[in-house]
Length: 85
Image 1 (tube, rainbow, N blue to C red):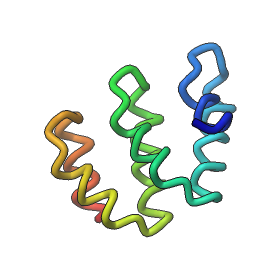
Image 2 (spheres, rainbow, N blue to C red):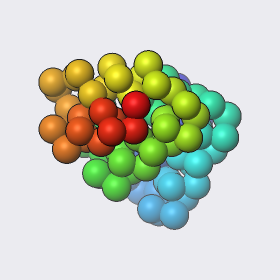
Image 3 (cartoon, rainbow, N blue to C red):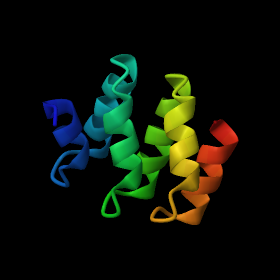
């Protein structure tokens, strides 16, 4: 895991810094880490949704399709992944 990824998942980091870290993951095309963020149950929905949008920004269609089919994540996130794919 990159330090940028760890910044996103740490609860003692401000929301602003966490969103900035997600943006860094998007800019560096770290699609595996973005997909992992979407799957993280304990992570706030706003961060998970931004990670989904980031996957779309990276044109990560295969990852979005996989998330759309993943029954372990929230149905609303699956629908969003399907729409973005």
